[in-house]
Image (tube, rainbow, N blue to C red; front, side):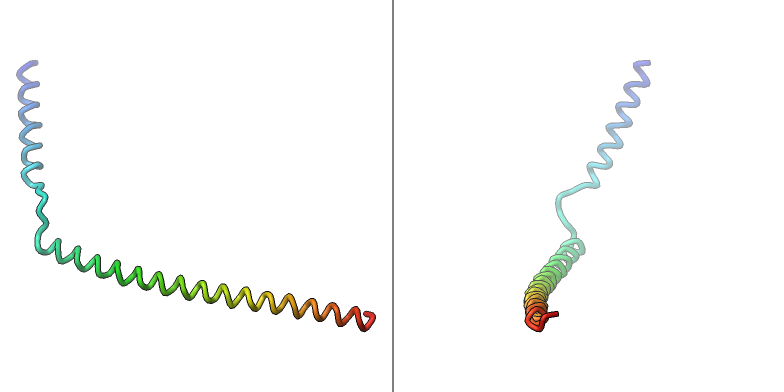
Length: 86
């Protein structure tokens, strides 16, 4: 039984060593170029988000102003109907 445990432990350590040897902290040139490209895309998309947010805020302001104007028109219409006795 001890023989199998030692063999299993050795095999597990060998597999772990193979996986660890394939891992390093250095990025390849392709990975660095891809990272640079993704950062550039991220920056462009963040700019687009900011532009769209500004457009949204402007449209919400316009909508609010039109809603206020509509409310005032409806109030004026109601006042005119009351003045005419309807």
